[in-house]
Image (cartoon, rainbow over all chains, first blue to last red; front, side):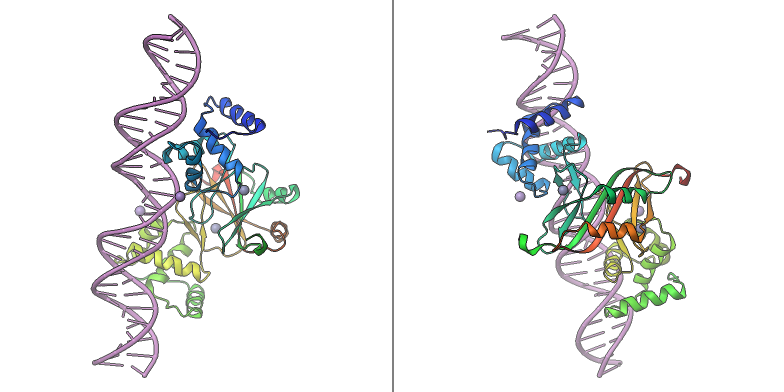
Length: 145
Length: 145
DNA sequence: GTTAAAAATGGAATTATTCTAATTACTGAT
DNA sequence: ATCAGTAATTAGAATAATTCCATTTTTAAC
Ligand SMILES: [Mn+2]
Ligand SMILES: [Mn+2]
Ligand SMILES: [Zn+2]
Ligand SMILES: [Zn+2]
């Protein structure tokens, strides 16, 4: 059966898509659902595997198409570190990412308003930043393994 | 003729490599030289083109090998934004990158110690960050085009 | 100069992602 | 409900940055 989003997620989802004149299809809902369901910053491949459990006929191209759409609607953020496959994150609050070099896991790191302001203040006059990306990498918390 | 590094760059170069038991070859010097020479955050492909002007026989594999070596020695930093090709930067001071979405140019943005500390302070207890990457993207300074 | 290790080379392989052309699913008039 | 037009999905081919591999060349040590 298709992924069932919570009522509030379903509303956000449908609303964000319709605002851009796009359709809330079951594939898009499912991709969004699996990203919300397990917030481990999955890759497109991970998402493909998970989506297939709910909608077995789904193609890889569709997963990529859906991801592009969801990112375009601002429902999901892309996380790029090094040259590794892009990962996807449904956390829309200002946050950074920490990648454990041992396990490969990616953790969310909240950014407080004060630090965020300081970061913004780095940008020289005449530049307009639409996007900020802050990534850490190193040894992660071993207790979380 | 092989690229001629300034005396001080040549010293840093040879010293950093020898510290790791690696040889300061002319290809490595040339790759390092072109990165120092034009600090526009070139891609491997850009570097390949520039290196060939000095050492025409150089292969693409060698450029990648040299870049890996230079990064491993800490002489050069990799800059990854989105999924675009990796770019290389010889600026070893703490700095962020701003990518102009219109021209694709990448600019260095200095990070003051205070902001750097605040950023470090975001990292949760138990995590040890070996690397920090801060990237902005948006509209760059049109006067620099 | 000989020998052994390191580096460079050319080309093949890998792989995440994008593209293309064909099919299917919606939408919204009629 | 039917039809037409558009949007979305699909399977597979194509792309492109990077890595790998086998071979040759260079270098360093003896
Ligand atoms: Mn898989
Ligand atoms: Mn070129
Ligand atoms: Zn995240
Ligand atoms: Zn830089």
